[in-house]
Image (cartoon, rainbow, N blue to C red; front, side):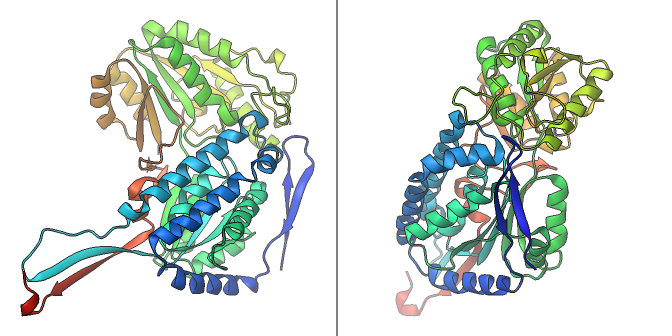
Length: 467
């Protein structure tokens, strides 16, 4: 039975849009259509796929004027930053399209006389992409474009908070002329998603979201041998060494902590600063955080929008209050942030000192505009604290000493090591994590390996053809 899904806007609490979930009886047909379309699509050359997928990107970008305010209404991203999401969408898409031919090329081992041996990369079949609301175009495109370029069909199940993003993907696919059924955006309930996975209808699922939801995905596919890719968040650390460019570190770490109202899997949530720079760093960070303009995301002057809903904002308020009650000190005066009140999705940014790893704010994912800062006395101490987490998505080191990064990097339990930057995805590099951050890879040439199956050919040549 179809259910109504409503997008309650964080801007003003109104219902921005509502949609019906797909009828249960329509799901087998949708999957059958995907498999049928994929059978023909896999025989399409990579060059021809690239032409259609480039048109898909062009079609999406042509809708930018509508997309940017839609983002603000759906999840609170200020319109001043909406174009950045589409720029990232284009960068990742075009990169993955450009490297597909090489990434999917046959692998030929050392020549063995009398034999023709090679490995081909074949598509998996139907890939289900379950995308979140916080970066709704970027997280989806990480899987959608390379999955299609690899010869798969794609079913997109977008977050109920950003349903219109899924519709934009569908509109772009249709406008570009992708074969019918090859890409399908479906509005699904959690139960319907579970049924698709548990029934073995899907060949690969790529999910971005919370750890509990990731566990649910794994439980759903148990026994089906469905491939699983999971990106489940982080508690990403930054380490400011004694030789860091302090002004650069303050500016970029604050941005990495509070951009998108802190609702980023790879946002900076904890900072370790060499004691010699600690006081100056926290003073600069607090001053910069206090300069944000927390207001209506539809106002171009706004630099910090609301969190996705009041429940999430109150969870961060509670985490912050618990830390202060246990001895932490809040450095940002909230008096100037008049919209930031209990029960509201609008939440002022906060910098905490006097924190420790007994506090949830330094241990559990906050996913909001709060960051804790601790002093350290050595690289060794910083490494131990950075690794003291259940998560491992990214870690950033702020220093002028490249050799130090090469020495520290191998000791960090993380998927990406940054130097003098943070909160960024380079599509040429593997996006992956360790520990509770999840499993699998998106982006880069390695991302194509998780969306294809290796098949080996070992041919003994006729005598006349031996070389």
